[in-house]
Length: 204
Image (cartoon, rainbow, N blue to C red; front, side):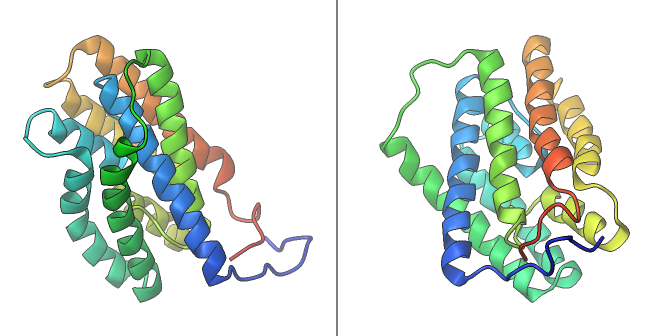
């Protein structure tokens, strides 16, 4: 669809950097809320959170390890520019995951609030990166590739992937936390379904 506002203007490097800082910070903060409440969510963030409850590694470090094969896929499927930006975002999330807990701490968060707010914040972080031609790696690379190449909405594909992740989480988490984790995954994907649509954004 052609935008009624004319062709979009390409983002500057400064705008990309700012968007990356915002996006990565929001994702880390969302992970903190979910981890504090003992929940998971969808995508690579959910896989990292789930594994963090059973292996002695932080969600941030697991996030990077899990991302490696998806980043290799991004180089082939989405091009070097996207892959480089996604790699930067992935390591940025890992770096900020080590910094942000030193400047803010959560003593308590209600699980329902953590599910809704944490999922939404992660979704907004992913959206910030996607608007600047980057992903967070993981399953997000697959969903963005399908939207770009096949026109399949990224949010809807993410929901299907998230369903599989949440089904797996039933073997490790109490049922009530699985239900709240489903809320967080829906909140995260809902952001992409509503806001990440071709023709609604004129920047590149």
